[in-house]
Image (cartoon, rainbow, N blue to C red; front, side, top):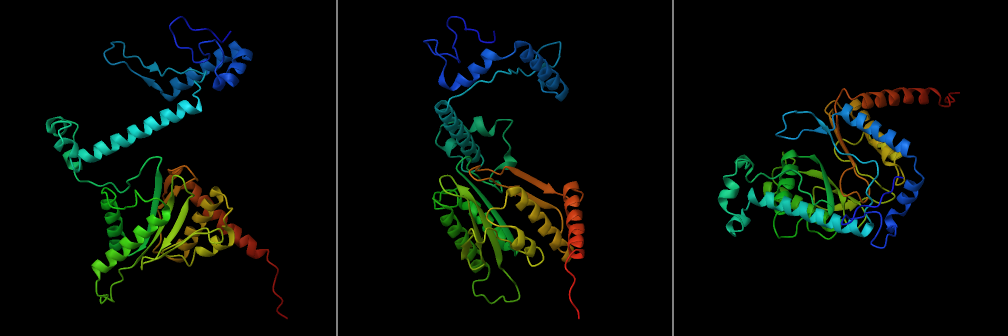
Length: 345
């Protein structure tokens, strides 16, 4: 019998105080009643062997034997109700945000020290404190579970870096910034305004015609509560948004790789297929323009994920990319060879 009643004074996860199975445990209880105990024991042994082989173990400091112990693992899952999970999720999110803000403060404004909440000695004399990290702003400042923003750039590198630096600096202030906007449209407006500001600062009279200060940006992402959105921001600061008819943007060297996207990618294209087409597009561009090359940085975002579901850097020796470009090369040759021959009289 896999179901046993816990002793007096112990909390029963499966049943309530009236010995009734809790609603969210009902399916598991039905499975346990009919489960084969020998099969469960066999699966538990298999899990232990797998954990040992993979090194999923730990040591207890202070013990002389020094033997690795298996991480405790129970095949019977603990089921958490939706209401309990919502409370747990909210608490964990709040804790992560609090820790992130605390860490940012002790390396930047030191408000918590100046307010006397904790002493300066506790922070700055701590052997784990890293003075070299003071005033350092990381290239990605995100709000877990609240929004995910991605910015791509092409054109004048100094301009794009200045825009990104200014956006990050203002993201840690109380002014309206990319981390406190109510929607992605407002975020695109701020990015466009910042672009105009930087270009005007570096070339106020527009007289440096021999220097191209312009850059183009693609802003994509999602703020919790609205749909994912994608914007192409021009050097003048104005922008357009992707639609079902034009579901993607491409900036930089686009003339060689764009035809494959125009012919294959549409609003209903799967992420897997879109990823393949993007790689083929890059391959076509690199084939025709030697200034474009590896590596390729990839980030894939799924709706409502509020964080990338896949990131990778593809180097020249990437086996999948090499296979894909070879298949594409041979496939085009076969396709052309099979076309209806022209009538030449």
